[in-house]
Length: 328
Image (tube, rainbow, N blue to C red):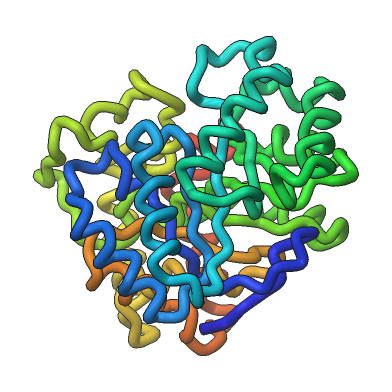
């Protein structure tokens, strides 16, 4: 497994981490035993980065991770969580009082005194310009409640605004073969300033696995069913905001590209992303041990040739650039 430094945290993390939204909610039901099996498979495969949030299953994801790591004190795992989505998304709700309450809750859920990394969870755009918000985060670090802080963003302009903050350690942003804008606008700045980039939605909600067809259906409690039009949250979080039928068609071509390089589509998509300059770690989710092991294997793939990247860009230009490039 390749490793890299997670920006200003200074922590060495696996290039393939584990996103744990699936273990909490919104992807169908996952039992506690199945969740622990996923965590086991990831850890055994060399994953040392778990990403969660206080709203995943209303804290269930954090609690699962906390109990799991308490049973494995020898495990050297960096845990990143998020806060800010437990209230209506108004800038005034990103208050000192709420920060402390959310922080107390996450520390209890994870069973630790100090959180490794806390990320503002896709806050309203106006929050990035409020000095007091970042002063409060600095205070949480000073008090030993958190070691580092970062942001999870929806859009490139939000990432760039956040990276102006001198103590920001990381930015989490959607990057995948169907969402390329961050390559031009965000990654070079992150490299220049030593800010870690956590790439989320790396498989475009599973489209890049090549397993879906136009006839594929999803459970009613799966966001890929109920959020296709952005009814519940930003539509960019579901299939990266691309039209589903276009995504399926593009995924067929991506699968052929992956096979030309001797790789499964998901493996190729994750390996390509993990190898981009500036990307610190990639956090695909997994609902089974097999998925967790397959995702982690992408961190061991040899460097892909420039021609692979060129083909990804060409595919994006044909299918998606006009529709989504300026949106996020």
